[in-house]
Length: 258
Image (cartoon, rainbow, N blue to C red; front, side, top):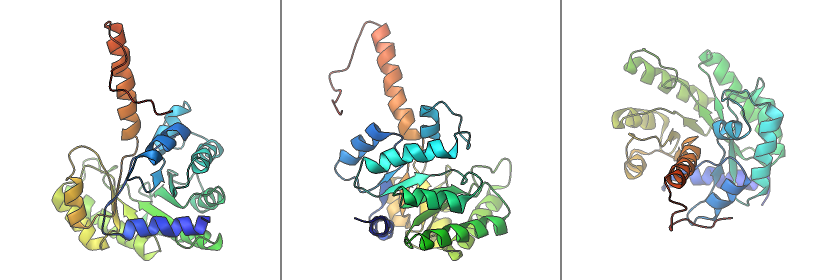
């Protein structure tokens, strides 16, 4: 498949009636393990997890070249479409996406970082223009708004209104889907999904949000897991160490996956 056809395949997965779930990966071995599990149809990287695995704090502290090099290794390890978490775009989101497309990436999360909505919307438009110029018009920009992540002590109703306003602006600018991370309740999810339209809202699967079945009914298009998948893996490692220190060892249920 070409990069353009993989992008179209990824976009189709978002538009399908079935909820798209992506358990995020951060290196080649995690990409291979996740890709080999039946039911996996696409991969998504987690910027926090990649940065942590290379010794960097989250928040664009990892150099862009290092992030893209890590993502490229993941892309080369699979035939599945890969969406990359590219934080806020490392100072030039459109150029970062252009470079990501060159290595085979067909979708991306880009944070708005609560920039003025006009500036953030212009960034979305520039990204989609860059993707089209690169021959990938179906590039799946998962335009992220940090309205809930950076809500602070703002009134929840105002935060929700802001997320709706920003999301609609990003969709109008050409983004196919909008990512609203946060611990959202069912009413908030319904409001966002109704405002954006069927399968155009994406969420993070943190504990406390509605079930996957309910999110499907509400019209959500995709659920990803960000750094939580790495936290799950590291929790298993920590528990193994604790068990070894207590005189135990590797559990009998362990799978040999590499």
